[in-house]
Amino acid sequence: MDRVYNFSAGPSMLPEEVLRKAQEELVIYRDTGMSVMEMSHRSKAYQAIIDEAEAVLREIMNIPENYKVLFLQGGASSQFAMVPLNLFKNSKKADYVKTGLWAKKAIAEASRYGTVNVVASSEDATFNYIPELDKSTFSPDADYFYITTNNTIYGTRYIELPDTGDVPLVADMSSNILSEVYDVSKFGVIFAGAQKNMGPAGLTVVIIREDLIGNAMDITPTMFDYKIHAENGSMYNTPPTYSIYIAKLVFEWVKNMGGVAAMQKINEEKAKLLYDYLDQSSFFKGTVVPKYRSLMNIPFVSPSADLDAKFIKEATAQGLVNLKGHRTVGGMRASIYNAMPVEGVKTLVEFMKKFEMENR
Ligand code: PLP
Image (cartoon, rainbow, N blue to C red; front, side, top):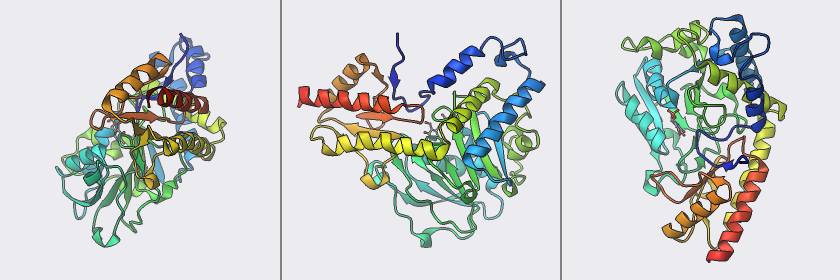
């Protein structure tokens, strides 16, 4: 069977070149005589892999010297707790913007350890936009300010970052890291689960400004303390070795593609193909307020739930898979992360045109 175009929101497509390279090195990695999966994380060969992963990530994201890169486990969901446990130190208060299910989960978790001020929400319209932020509602003494840069389920994205002054900006970048250029120096913490734009599940990348490390609350479990991981080069315990290795190959792939700016250009081109089609269609409809449309996750609906189901079924038969929308919103969602080729989006649009003609 040929590879399909996989529009899954995550885990999602990986670049075929990366998978082929991993296949080549699967059983015997270079001159080690063993698979990366079988290596001690303390070995010289593995240290070279993790060092290279960090170096290339630093290069493609232009991560400043005074930031640590941590390769952790526990998913982005663990960060919902790790962020407050480590960053609540003075007022034990933080500002959050409620832009979807993941932000809600982060709010619930932070509320267990301190005071959460929800400065804005788009829940009134099923999170189909990013709320405008009014600086006068920000807490001047907040320990941090929290956003989700791209909302995977609803397909929204911040078009500009909030100006939080001296209050560190914390971002859940799980579904758009490496897809567009961000100035890392504008953030206190960036975190992302790897399984969308960086590699297999099991790895969570944290990029954190050094001065925010070392203030964990007393109750913080050892494994949730950024300081422990920073001091041990992400090797306090066994890191997700194979996921880090694949992520290294993905970082190298991004670099070879011309870096994050080049990826952004391709992503804008891919998203435009789909949005332009949706905007002129009288059958399919995009569900997001246009200004806040994501480049990564594109939700849309047909005229009825029955036609949605028919569309998903027929698309699957054509090798266009995982187009079903999130269970909480229904309809369809095309996730077109970095690894989705332009050709995949073109094929989807052609299929949508045909389906529209046959079913309108
Ligand atoms: N944050 C965002 C924006 C997500 O899209 C997801 C998963 O889809 C998560 C957090 C949760 O990630 P994990 O499953 O790695 O805990």
